[in-house]
Each structure stands twice: as C-alpha cells, then as structure tokens.
Image (cartoon, rainbow, N blue to C red; front, side, top):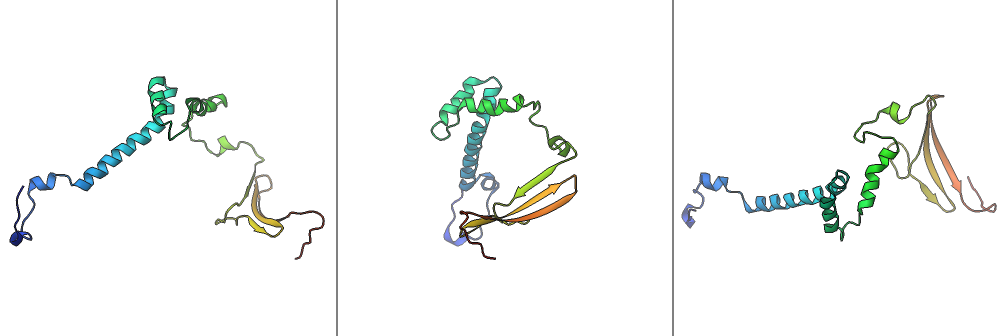
Amino acid sequence: MRVLTFRNVGTAKPTAKDRLRPSLPFIAWATVTFFAFVLVASVVGAPFAQAHGHPVFASSIYKTFSFVCHQIPQRSEQVIERPKTMGITDPQKTYDTDDLAPGKKIIFAATGVTDGALMRGVRFFGSGKRTHSLVMTTESKHIRFVDTVHIEGGPDTVIRF
C-alpha cells in the first residue's frame, strides 16, 4: 500500500491492485445478501424437503425456525397433498379460462371493498352502508354495475332521500 502525503493527495492514482480489492461496504452487502438468501431458501425449502423424502433435513429446519415461524410439518404436508386429493396432478400447470370456468352459462360477481379504478369501496353512514358491485353474465352478455344501499335497524328506521 502506498502512503500519500498531503501535497500529492490529488495526484495519486489507484494501482491495479487497489482497484481489484473489494470495498468494505460491498463485502458487508454481499454477506448480508448471502445470509438472507440462505434464510429464505431454508424456510421455503423445508416443506419441499419433507415431501421429497428428506425428513431429517426438513425437521432440522423446522426446529431451527420454530421460535419465529410456528409452521408445523403436518401443515406443510397438507399444503402439498391437498391439490392431489382434489385431482390436480400437475401443481405447476398454468390454467386457462376454459380450465377454470368451463361451460356456457357463467356468472361473475364482485363487490368493491376499497376504492379502485373499476368500483368504489364500501361507504358507511349513520344507519347503514353503501356498496358498489359488478355482475357479468355470458348468457345475456350483460355487464351490470349495481349501487346498493343497505339500511340497518328495524322497521322504525327513517329513510330520507
């Protein structure tokens, strides 16, 4: 390493050896990134290790993270096995429209919970709420926007328009 004096601070150029040496912030970033990747890979990999015949490896991960994540191996097995019981043989398959909604008479309905570009969210007022919904049907080829006021209370509730 070269020692620089005050008069040649601005004129010194880094050598090839200095340029190849990683800086301390880069080393810290790389270390943290590596351990974060290992942590996430371990948590995500435990159910898959259990399902693919590596119970010792999976149980060690579960025991390591048991104080943070209360996921139990039986729950992971249910998540992996449930699609098989429903007749789904390939969990990686991308389903298209005909797979998800086969048939000629399809009805789609949605109600806004929060404000969005298509519908407003639920609005609460003194004795009720107001909702905005969307209903689409393939049979009649209609798209309906429904604005509904839900009044709470008994028969004595006064409604003013």
